[in-house]
Image 1 (cartoon, one colour):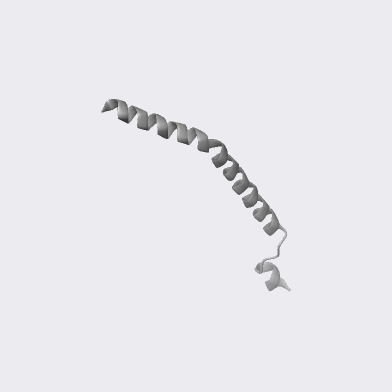
Image 2 (cartoon, helix red, strand yellow):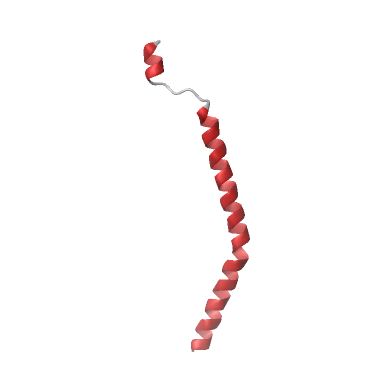
Length: 54
């Protein structure tokens, strides 16, 4: 019975190893998208104290 658990755990490790590259790619793309969104908002005008002075 121990052998079957060891085999299953090894299979899970192998599956995680296979997914690692794809998961890193997705994480990188998500980070780039988040950065792009933040950058796009830096130049936008928001209402607030500046509008009250006008």
